[in-house]
Amino acid sequence: MSGPFYISHGEITRVDGLHRRARIAAGTEFSMGVHGPIKEHYRLDTKDLPLPVDYIVAATGG
Image (cartoon, rainbow, N blue to C red; front, side, top):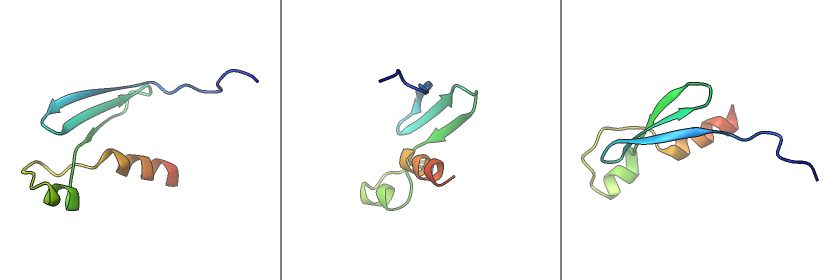
């Protein structure tokens, strides 16, 4: 079997609380956090930001 065809590289940094900023190898940056029912369930008082899974769903659908 051959080696991997592609290896993804990225960096995630904590901004504050649940707010994270991700940077991928192409230079694109985006913020992640919590919103909607998850935020309500845990009674969080934070800025609404997309969940990491929101980006995964968007990437697989795109």
